[in-house]
Length: 66
Picture 1 (spheres, helix red, strand yellow):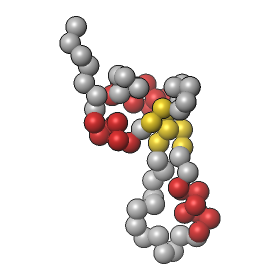
Picture 2: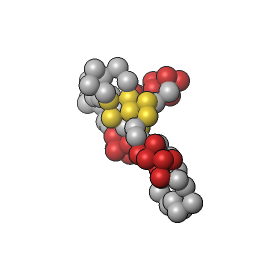
Picture 3: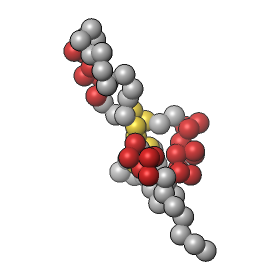
């Protein structure tokens, strides 16, 4: 069997947790237009989020060695 290729765009966006059971992602809406967003909201957007279970299998297919 040939080696499976990793989708490099997905590799830059997703990381597995320490146990490898969950996949973490970055939150949206913290790129620009930040002046009207509160500091609390921006701070919360800085935290990582867990990929939803319905999408996790698609991410795992893109990252075969995750």
